[in-house]
Length: 583
Ligand code: SF4
Image 1 (tube, helix red, strand yellow):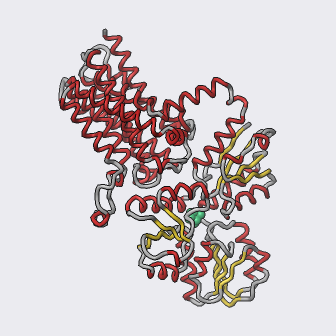
Image 2 (cartoon, rainbow, N blue to C red):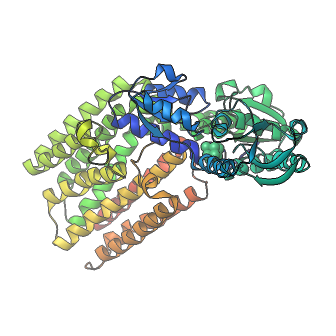
Image 3 (cartoon, rainbow, N blue to C red):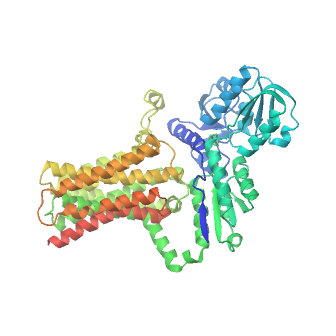
């Protein structure tokens, strides 16, 4: 069975933007964030938002004060005024593309035009748009309803942003016959258009089209209708739990698409379930392998192993003559420290992560108490080992450990935070996750070894520190892109969220180039078999990982993380080979 997934399936950027705003607000303020109406028509995401203290309020009468966020659909201008009159702090997450329609209506309404909106009369966006009209306003679903409209002297026609181009065009043709002056603007938004175009293309190629999304989501239902019109058998599901093997058993090709309110992790779960139905992926060996990879990743053992092997490479790069008796405690301390920090961080984030789709958070939530104990013991062992190497080494790890523990703690009072762009926690700093991860690894894998084994020159020491920092920053930024695109992280913690897709790509390319230059520089002073040339093999590996991610070839779930963090293992393995060869 072939599985084809629509590239644009899932959250549109307007929905993602509103969710980001809600999550950022919830992190900054002390009380709950009230959204005026559900932020998104997706029961699973709404549950997750409730866990993060973001609640939907339906009636104005229920709002007395606190913080209110207007959702992407927008609201009537007078409703804005009423919300402000309640004494609440009102934030606006109206999608800019909806705001554009509101402006068009306002402009023509001010020139005494009547308004026709092509859309669903009861949809929140349309209810909001009606508030910007002044004269007569009509809402019609299609050309048939347009037949019942009266004649107009001057009329402005717009569409609900999630309408369909063809329906809009046909409806305008009917209204043309009834108006002296007609100003029609097709305001179907680009993300909707892309979703619909891709769904139609896919529906023509498959035996079964699976549409994932809320049953009350208008745009999801429209995708299902469009696919059905193309003659495809359509299955509209809200979660992977509804998918039965019998429904896909006879299919050669299955298409998967999703509405603008469906997170990518939900789509991934559906795809994973479909893959599990394929006989070739359900062999026992395959299942064991997947489980083993999952346990290694979810328990943070794999990331600890990565830190240990990177420390081996960094220690040898600093001091090629270092003996095994010094290498072992260095490598073990770094591995245990990184395992502990990732575990503590994940524990702090447990409510945010719960159910956000990927394997690791789900497994972590199930075994969180055991994992927390493993993390605490690992941290104690790491600190003990570092202290055995020297006081400075113990202090360096302890200081960064404390910083890591405070990462998600609200350190600045809300009243002060208002004056410093809302930053209350280390986590609120732009790209904090990528920078803090790179810094933590650098302390464990480069600074502690430097304090222990020294370096032949300050330049070499700086080169190795730069190599470790950049290498880990690259990995973290790449995982950040994956997480954001998988709708798992919302807020400004990752580089991708702060600077956007194109600039992140430029930063990644720049980081690979600098990494290459650093490794070439480290190669320079030695004769014979240079260690840095061995470690250099990580550069093509890293490039291959970045490229396969860009081409959407990187496997999802634990296998993807194994491959991404595999670059540390490659660096360590090459350094170890060199070490063996030298003896
Ligand atoms: S569907 Fe379009 S208009 Fe609506 S929130 Fe998404 S991007 Fe904005």
